[in-house]
Image (cartoon, rainbow, N blue to C red; front, side):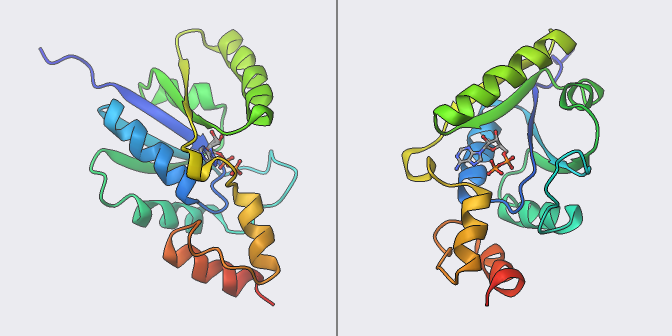
Length: 165
Ligand code: ADP
């Protein structure tokens, strides 16, 4: 009998996806049989997202179309519950700076207390993306800056439409 596939979940708001996210998703796709990119579709976050879940999912689908073992799904539950329902034993996240570390350490302790069978794995951000965030990209786009090296091409175009002055 074939062993169970090793499945990882990469959760996030991806508002919008950046090249840093794509880097983490592709690295995870080399380590696992299947990767599910879980896109937050809930109003738990105080700040409203710029793009709705459907559009955020479309951006990631096209940016990862070359990765056969990656699929994208919306979620509106606890990440650990979502992971369990999909048979995933790992949550994979990217770590940029110390600020990410503090937040992730807290989230990790909480998730561990909820589901000790789901392990969280952290991939260090690639140096060229370690200061790249969705919120930073939105800020640059708001002031007419060039984000074409930071996000997939269609995302750069949509940011210009949505935020450009
Ligand atoms: P953001 O913090 O950019 O709004 P998300 O909430 O969508 O991102 O984060 C999803 C995951 O991707 C998190 O684990 C986050 O740490 C990671 N991540 C975000 N940007 C990068 C990057 N530039 N390099 C590596 N990991 C990243």
